[in-house]
Length: 93
Image 1 (cartoon, helix red, strand yellow):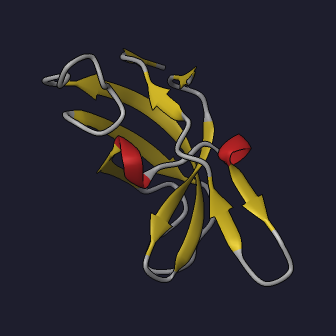
Image 2 (cartoon, rainbow, N blue to C red):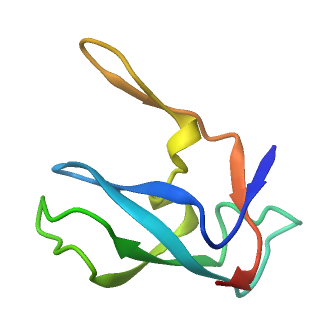
């Protein structure tokens, strides 16, 4: 499992599509059996492009599974696949 932290280029996985962003801070509240990705990880991101209800420069917070790093997103002609083989480690940029 790959680890990522502040400064990572990522996407917000919204119902209207992927919104580009950069991770600003990661807070781990309560890891569940050492799994940082799904339980208690809050990721603060800065939106880099206006679209799908978000303005460029806006700071928003999501759980870690809603903000896949760009390296984990594969785009094909008819679909987008997000690999869940990642986790965020605590820190602040």
